[in-house]
Image (cartoon, rainbow, N blue to C red; front, side, top):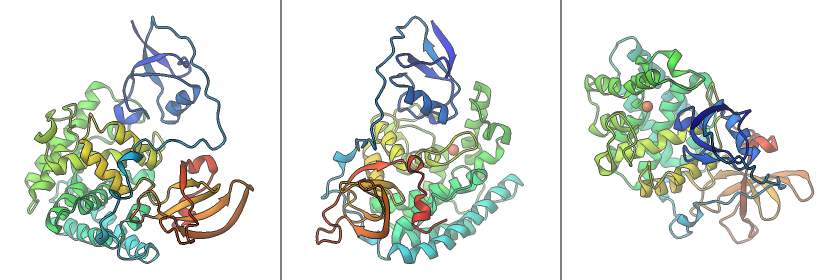
Length: 409
Ligand SMILES: [Fe+2]
């Protein structure tokens, strides 16, 4: 018999049959799971999960409690898909040092955010979308990505919970532009897909705010209402001038899943446009890494692992691998530990995605802060000192703000 229990009643050893919340609202890859440790229950609480469904007649034999290690190095499960040979990023994407591009990227992002606000306000007021304004914002974002994509990637981490809808639209646009550039698409296709990212959720303006921002699990009726945003989006864009086909497809297909478990049509595999498949990946990546009014966002590296776990079911496997290469195994702004015992923040990627430029900040062997300096781990000529990353670290656990370290706050 299936029984609903609170997280206080949940114990290590129990089998969760399903969660009393959506797939995106819990931290695990699968909806069925055996709870092994109290730590996993605490993660569920952190995510705002209050109830789960368990099989009532199961064995509740407690699982062994995991001994917390000092600085446990989490394995990078998807590391084998990134070899120095395959991890070369598109050279066109990095011409300008991040310290220079960040200033321009900040202005560009600000203008794109204002454009997103205008677009959504117009839709809410029943007015037409100004396609020219949206396209101008996408062109500026694309130019910044071609200069150095890490600048906008870093700025995406600066988010306000109450501005989620605007920030999410811009971020999905940015991610899609960078994804397209990394795939080698031409400018016209890249910007059409980026525009789709900026406009993909305009249909949400038709969903009541009480449902959109509901802090607890949605009931069936509310979930159906949310799903309607895709249809609304299609209708809005159908009456908007100069919307390229890939952008309209993204609005319609970003909740479809490769294995047919998505909505609104349950399309499968190649039945979903390439832009639609890419948008599904970027939409989930941004949603999971963002702070929401009902839960905190999770580390980008963790989310990349989740995507990797879903790459044989919900998403196109090849595209997930390409996306991980685009974002980087250790994205800019990630806190990492080096073999030497140094803690460092990733500044920007290099041609070798396993060896980015990092800013050293703390010596864990001597337990003291050090004078900050940047080293390029891809260089073996002494500047990188032959050091390498052995793990990524939770910035929250170390109480370090990586953006502050990089001077971006
Ligand atoms: Fe959506």
